[in-house]
Image (cartoon, rainbow, N blue to C red; front, side, top):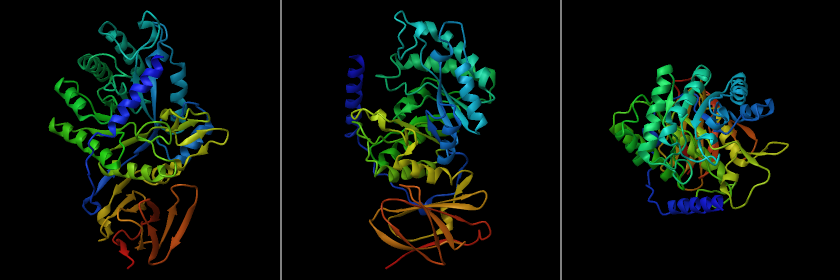
Length: 432
């Protein structure tokens, strides 16, 4: 009964977002760049089978980061007894497969409560117990985990934090101090703030909770791409108004292909939305995006959007949903690059273009038109490029001094080499 009530309340909250005013922010590609990009993409709830088969899947998708709970209730099932067997196995498998880990330090332990049932709350009398778990966990994994995220979506009170804001801020400050006392160089992020709430972030700054924090982590789920961009801009503007000089990470972002959430999209429209979401985030200097999430189960409840966020179906074949190909096309070609739009010569109104040049000279060029379908002539220095299908596995070769490209609102993803002719521009012309 309680679970049913929670889901109804959650659906009402999400439907309310339909009426939330979203800006009409647009980007001007000619005015962007350079932007440095390192290893920017990962997946939530990934690597947990610890099996080579799953890691082969992650490699194919281009996933470099794994965001996973290092749950208090798993590590300290009985008070005072720490058991790291499960997290050890996950951590070792991830590192063996060259993945970076964003570990979430989170939630309660069942033994805290008289009824032994988990609750989205830690009362002040257990703050010291929480920091003991944090200290033990961070001490064990500080040289293996790349960053620690403290809690998840505490501003989504109907699910992840049942107390007052100032109670969470107190717990958060204690936790940050405990981690930094172990090693001041450990990367610590804010909790993943639900829907990029700049008001909640402002409260954290005003409460003095942001001292020693390296990264602002947030979840800008939105119905529209302008709404997504608006959340990013508001978070950055709020942080900068307080003098924050750290990084911005999106530790959750994705779209369900079913259920009742108003952010859902059809599977046919998921590839375009995925590409644009990733590109727009990186263009706005988001240093890491961990997509929510890897797997859908074979059996899914039609009304529950949480069952439809995955890129892959967890069946015998690990069947790719269409969005998986879009994620792969970007993730496999964007690491260790600069966004170098000044290298593109284009004066076509409504054309969105983003050119990422990797340190090895390879380039990723993403194009789409906001003004409907059109044909373009494209010239690249190498005279040859690969076009990645963002809805399927095909990759085709294009060649010539001027290549004809058909383009519309669905992005075209191209890769090519630019190792020896860095002084030559990419030229895009309209075909009249």
